[in-house]
Length: 295
Image 1 (cartoon, rainbow, N blue to C red):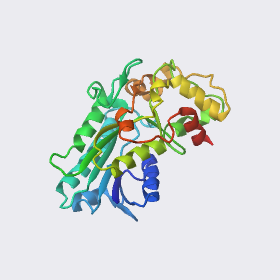
Image 2 (spheres, one colour):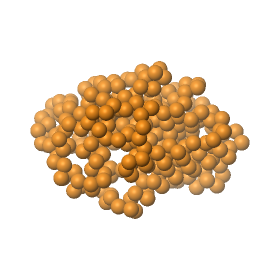
Image 3 (cartoon, helix red, strand yellow):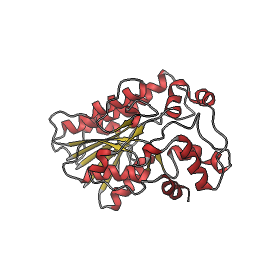
Image 4 (spheres, rainbow, N blue to C red):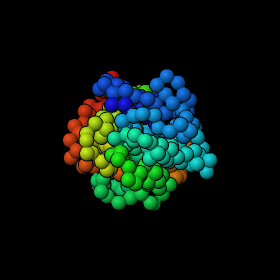
């Protein structure tokens, strides 16, 4: 299968590319600049979709980039990098003489309203209560291609845990130094997934005929994981204590009040349809996932 991947050189894209190629698929990336096995977004807009059997979009600016000040300019960049790239790929698919068989977009569990008690499946409502939920809704709406023969799937990802990037890269050194701990109260839900499982779910959606709709990209044990239990498990995997919480005021000072919600609150998300689809998680439990990552 020939797969075109938007954002294929990023953290999740690299893992997905490795998995797809290990399974015998050909992968071409869409990125800012063209190169070997890579086309640019401008080329895609001007010349249309290259011949391929499936398309995936993983492109998107890191919302929690601590070096970017929260404001209108950053919000516009986030929307452009996520929603507009999805629109570009969807238009290319719609205009293609030979459209692909499968079209997968990765969004986020920010679609669901944060709650300490509610549990959400793929059928739960959400998507219109803050910037992040509307961002997910807009991205998923942009992916819709009425009348297209391309089978469409959306994977709503939790916090992606893996080596060399994502959440772990931002917090590993404080924990290695024994300075890590829970964020805020530590009681908020922590929806997580190992990067190999997120790549695995996307690959599963591409390879499984008839699979379409929304799939939650979180671990089966994610609903039982709080931020505090995550901090304790990460510290244990590193052989360190987890005694120094990051107070809520400090989180708001670094990220701004709107972004801080993503860290100080959370969602209990269940991968109901993902499990029903036949996907088997490689890392369903947090201790084993963290042991694999920090080893």
